Length: 296
Image (cartoon, rainbow, N blue to C red; front, side, top):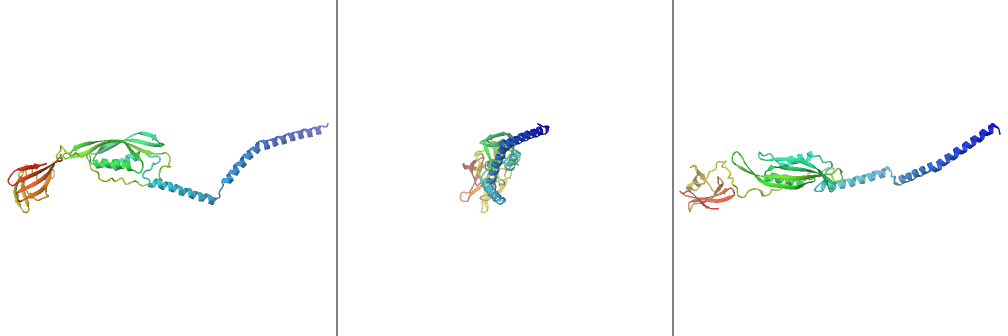
């Protein structure tokens, strides 16, 4: 066999091997990948929608988001996302109203924890304030739009007497407060307005019924304790107070610790009602005589 024929045979064998290898790769390896791509393409074609259809779906989703957001907006509480710790300090400053001489509020951060899928910060709020201001702060915390809850509270009376001798009946308080938040935005409205945090007037349960402190006579009113009824005239009664100063008083006129409640021309007496630290006394002055207490 000639050399030329041998070369042709070798080339033919190489061609057959290359063709066989290519066929095996194409049918065995590439075909599998092609089948996988065909399946993915089929799924994409099934889920494919036109641009107009996509805009319609987008509008529907935006409407659903608006409905959910409106529910969160109109709900009494919302749980904010990624709540800054400074928010609560500003909140307490805004609603504590501790701008009087004998009142103050102190806020301390106590830590972060999780509960029922939500995160919360814990704060200790303490101080001294008037009953209404402390009540307003508690009301604001419990009713604020961004969810806050008082975990525990300690309240007690606190009395301060100023330089004039006037007692101020205050409330000493310590509150443990949780402020809730979430790292997800699904519980918070995009925009929201604060709830009405102005409470109605409430009776001061910490005001003492009987007080050992008697307010001073800072208005320089007539002190009829130990006084004398000088005379009765159609315009009222001339009363001499315990300092010897004579005053013309009419029914309803104020005196130290009370007011003139009755003028009896027939019996020639005048009667005063006095509030002595929560103890009510009726004092009667007879013409020409010293003060006479009728009762409490």
